[in-house]
Amino acid sequence: MEFNVLSNDRSKGGIYIIRNLINDKIYIGGSVNFKRRYNEHHRDLLQGKHTNPKLQRSINKYGLENFTFSIVEVCCEDDIIKREEFWINELAVIDNGYNILATARGINKEARAKIAATMKLKPGFFTGKKHTAEANLQNSLKHKGIKPSPETVKKIVDTRKRNGYRHSEATRKKLADRRTGHPFILSEDDIKRRAATFKNTWAEKRILVNELCINCNNTFQKRAMYKNKKVCPRCKKLQ
Image 1: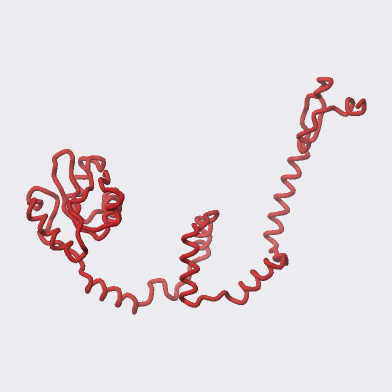
Image 2: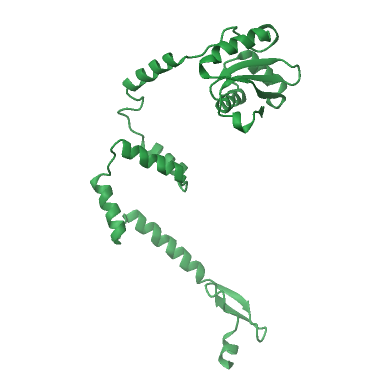
């Protein structure tokens, strides 16, 4: 689905239209953020679980590439529901389009504030629970090697300062040891893994390979670890 919205308007809100390029049928919707709403539509339609069955069936029939997302008008958040209902009735999309209801199903600021206040009083769904060892390992492997951006690091630091976060005594001791050059104590598994890696690397370097002498053009053997050795022992003595 093509996103026909100028970059300056992507974070704005208002009324948008989804148009079928094959039969010219349309869907009218409203949102406080065009880019976020487009991503939600695109994701749900691709996964086949959109809340609008008429639009989902049409996407399945004609293909997502034959639809476009564009702006009808930009308006303030308080007017979105009223303007959405106006365009639904003005363009008669109930009979000739993909909209199902003539009234917009939106949440005003007061209702949104009540929901937010109620959710703050409730404990999180994961409160009191712990990840299993397998889940922790999967999360560790998934995020291994990924470094957060400077903006993300700044947000984390600001949040911790705002909430009064402090490192534990064990964490502060580790950070202090790192700054003063004190080595960390490796576990037995870490020591075995490092020893095996070093042993394999050293064994590979000691493999014998054939090399052509640059002086006498005779073939001689050398260890693979000596990559720059280009002269045979006999020529080296003569030098």
